[in-house]
Length: 117
Image (tube, rainbow, N blue to C red; front, top):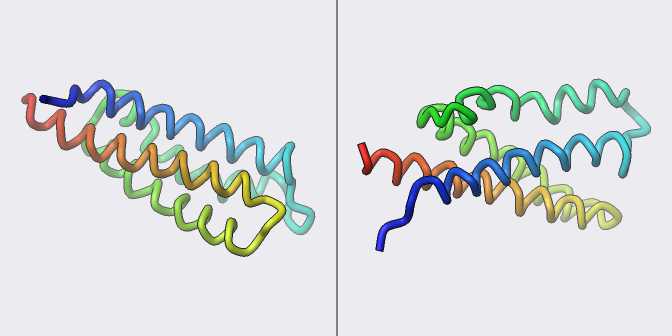
């Protein structure tokens, strides 16, 4: 039984765009920061996702690997936020789930796409 790389790629894209949408909604509509400007919070939280975006959309294996590395930042943020802030535990759990989808999807895409070539 072989796993087709397209399924891993779809999982990675779902995690990527889900994480992007969650961070945008979380920091603007659902629970905006009262201590920092919203633009600054968005810049710091969303900017790392934008770095490997073009290569991820082009199915570049190196960019997919970098997207897997970047997703670990969001996994750490989600676990810390879920532990510390009980009011936003649902959003943090979604961040953990989506970052894991991005991590495993992109890592397995690089693994299985490399075997086909």
